[in-house]
Length: 248
Image (tube, rainbow, N blue to C red; front, side, top):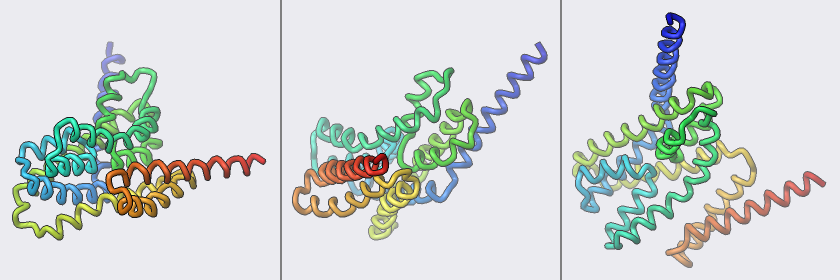
C-alpha cells in the first residue's frame, strides 16, 4: 500500500511539474508578440461594435486570430450568420494539417480521445510552433499535460489582454493598434519559415507572398484561396520533381 501511495503522489507531482513547465513555456517572445497582436484585435472589435463580453468570449472560443478578424469583417459588412460561420470555418481549415501533425506527438496508448479533442482547440500557429520545438524534450506520457499548460495559458492570457485593452482602447492611437495587429502575420511567416523541415515549404511561402497581392488585385474575393492552391500546388510539384531527381 505504501509503495502504491508514494507512486501516485510521485505521478501527481510529475503532472504538476510539466503543467507548470507548459505555463512557463508560454512566456516567450512568440507569446508576447501574439499578445501585442491581440491589442490591435481588441481595438478592432470595439470599433466593430462588439461588447466587452462578446470580445472576450470570441477570444476564448475562436482560438485563431485570423478567424476572429474574418468574423469581425463579416459583422462589419452585414453578412448573414451562415455566411459568417462559413467564412470563419474556411479560414480555420488551414489549422487542420497542424492538428494532424501535432496529435501523433501528443498521443500515447492510454490517451483518451476527448483529451486530444480538447487540446486541439488550442492549436494555432504560435502554440503549434512552440509545441513542435519543445515536445521532443518532454516525456511522451507528459506531453498532453505540457501542451495543456502551454495552450491554455496562451488562451487565458490573451483573454485578459483583450479585456484590459478593450477598456483602454479609446485612448490608444488607431495607427498603433493597426501596427500591433500586423505583428501577427509577420511573426507567423518568420516562425513557419524557420520551422519548415523541407524546401517545398519555403517555396510555398514564397509563392504565396508573390501571388497573394496579385490575386488580391485581380480577384479580391478569391485571392487567399487561389494563392494557396496555386502556390501550394506549385511547391508540391517542385518537391515531387526534386525527389525524382534524387532517386535517379
